[in-house]
Image 1: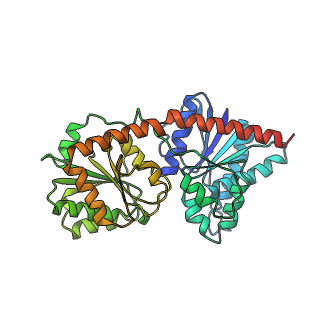
Image 2: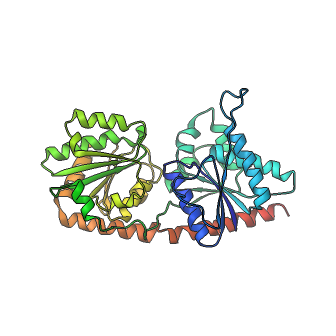
Image 3: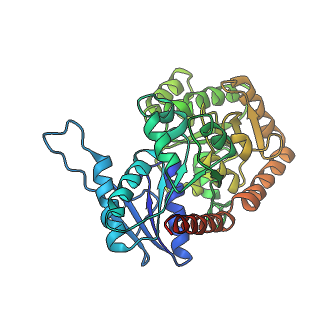
Length: 381
């Protein structure tokens, strides 16, 4: 099968999922064509049956803003025609699915009908889709796609609250549990925690919705309770400076390390004792799944799709949004009770393997592609 995939190629959950899906499909013999404005972050290198088609964005004086959606449309048309793609998989409704639908109309004039699958990741519904200036385009892009998937039951329900009549298939995010596992990194941990301290870790793109400063606040409270503990903050974004200032204000900066964007992140997760995700919005929580696969209990906010991933009291703890005392108490329990921590660490790893391993999820996408292509073929007969 020849599959075209478009995603945001930057550091973030949707781009990671799209890239890892493409790599996994290629490993199973499919020919994958990534179409984006730059090489996807997790792609690394181009394999024999993985190709990258760069979208060139030209800045003409006539345009105040570069018309990326139109450039993407033209590249999709070109790639479908000359690579003879069987199906397009667009990650995010706009601009990706929108461009794909326009490309499909252009291609149909030449007798080419390309099926389109759109995967919804979250903000295309919860933020962009709620904006009246975008909502009609978002709704049209979803409704006119040949197939639509969402990464959680919560996101599917949220999507259907809008003017959406599409039949949405839930296919959760996934992880390669052979890659994401507890690795022997004792020397690394000793360098970070020279006196045997425990380690709290947070990974995100440091947007305000990730609430990274709350992680610093909880870390400070844990130190006040007498825990010997260090904090690693992984990633970068607009709230990194705020988190740094908060650490200085609380007097804990010397015990906090800001590592920026890191790859491979599993080496960092392998030395973590607790992973914290106090997000204000989280459709699935891929970073939390990565931690769970590495045997790290997760403390997260009880919002969005996180309750579908983190089993409260079994693989970690869920707390009410913004409940700093609740987060602190949960971390205190994990850091104080070795048996509880060991049980939750083991349960986290088992859940990641049994429910979200790439070997279980990728076949679901393959079956869905076949279903969508069969349906599209019948529609034109």
